[in-house]
Length: 212
Image (spheres, rainbow, N blue to C red):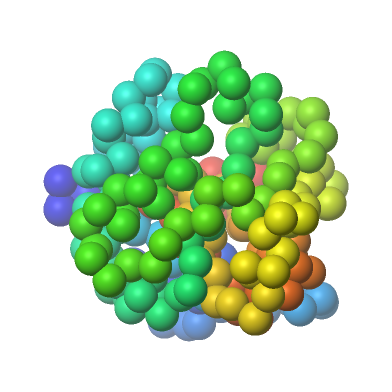
């Protein structure tokens, strides 16, 4: 599977693949408001064969694939350092009805798998964030609607505010399409008092596939 995970130059704040040596993609360069998310790392592009593995992982009741996906994440340059420099690992939460129907949060399965493979990883905080609303799934929406859809979509859990205050948090998810979900979740964590929030995903959708 290594041949399907080539080293890619990526935007440091949204992990979009870049065609040339640079730190930021065009969207992040032209962003007018400061981002609540620091760095973001992605192990692979959301393309063959990873798209099928991730679909099986999250839609076809195969949470055991978290181990193989976590191993791919840990093989990516910078990931181990990003994990061990954090105080908490936080999974991007699902909407309650989706969690009930699926039976597990794939992002939390990744957190557990990462911690099982990296002995000095920080603890996971499973209920740090609450996802609000009944908006459609992000992958079904065009980019501008995703941006509107996720404004205020997350809040920090009141019982976790003290644990988050002054801490460095690493947000974990399976796929980032435009970075909007991570940014919205990071904003909620920063509002709770986290001093740094970074992101880590298995796969990043290439820009030419993220705007239907």
